[in-house]
Length: 165
Length: 451
Image 1 (cartoon, each protein chain N blue to C red):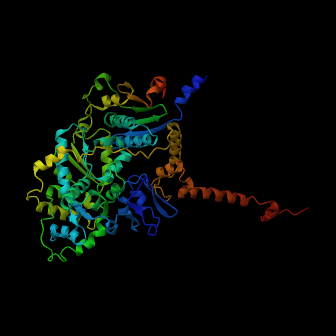
Image 2 (image 1 turned 120 degrees about the vertical axis):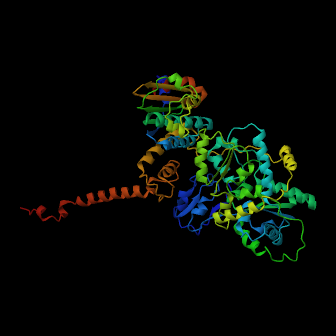
């Protein structure tokens, strides 16, 4: 019983930030990243962690702008970890393994001309997170979850819990 | 010791309690309470934006006054590179420097000359060392303070070389010691500054190292005196060696792009204006601009020539300084290349102490408590009108919510919320007023005569 409560408590208190991402909105990614950063700094998280989460939020939002036109990025903060969930109703990723390779990009020419879509987004996010999970279906959309633990000792304890958020 | 000294302060009597300044502050460090602006000391970076924004000139930069330095046996003035942009181009630089001696200084050393040393050291550092790109200039103290507060993980990308003002003070004092035989403590070095942040940094250094500069005098404070003495009594003096030693490489540091062009290594980028600096640093923090080698960041638009303590309009000052830079580009430099190389290899102008972060944004030391506060902050923000009008004295609705959570403000500080509450109260009053006992009812229909 008490064990149950402890597991419950890991997820509380809990703060969720939402960022709607729309087509051609190249500015929203930067805004989402800096708002997230400010919140995490106010919570007193370590700089390294703040930086990594901001990068994940930025890349996730950018992926939606470039590839999916519409979607949402959520940042869920609990005392033990932070999870970033990016959901879109885009074309999906046909080959996730390929997409995870550095330099592989299917970004449209216009985006590449603007200096985006260098094929570093997903690998970069993976580097910045402890767990990253992608669910995708061609023609339907993609959901990406990336989790960063805030204390190394918590990592194991929360491992399963993180996936439920 | 007081933890925070700031040059930027409030002239209490002049402040009318308007909210112009709170909107312009890049770090949300000002609130208006009880009709007066208050600067939150821990947050202020002395950038001077509020000095520019205040229509009542109630924001002032406090610098030192001349008479404070009488106890030094030998006094040296260190005019900033941008100082020479404050005069008409018919006036000779030599005469401007001479005027410092005429008003009572024993010697004068151009910060622009020290900037030439720094230029060489930074160039060599970029060429020889391994570092994470981009490397930031260490010259602007307001930018460094901003980084301490908002971008702490970029601090290790600041080039570890002293700012020209410190190099100038060390060099000037060393020369004076040789010339006069006086000990270091009896020689005073005074920066003639366009910048309130420099005044702060001298009293409250960014690192553990004590500044070699003994005082900072605002340009606006000394300008008239210098102007009066530019030619006065000049003829009576015997001509000594030339006081003006700096050349275009150092003089160009007075305006934005000057520094990065002088350093001249790989890809350079120059940004001015504190708000522009913030958006650029945000990009860099996300890992962008890794192909830029050196980045010059200036808090004031236009660079130091746009400093709030200067006399001339920024654009006028810049044109004048540019003309001077052009004029002195062909002459032989004061320092030989091998002298500069010696100074680089000697390492005496390297910053060995790291610049420490100053995180001040934390809501609570306990992360769980901070999260609860942030949840509340979020709720309050949603509940506020989102006008960001500033009438409550906080710069935005979000900032007010933060102040409420921190216990410094109340939701009734919001005039829109207060209006809503008064409306509810008025309606309740009306309701009550209508509930008169029947004995007092003035409706004739209800007045039923007793049988």
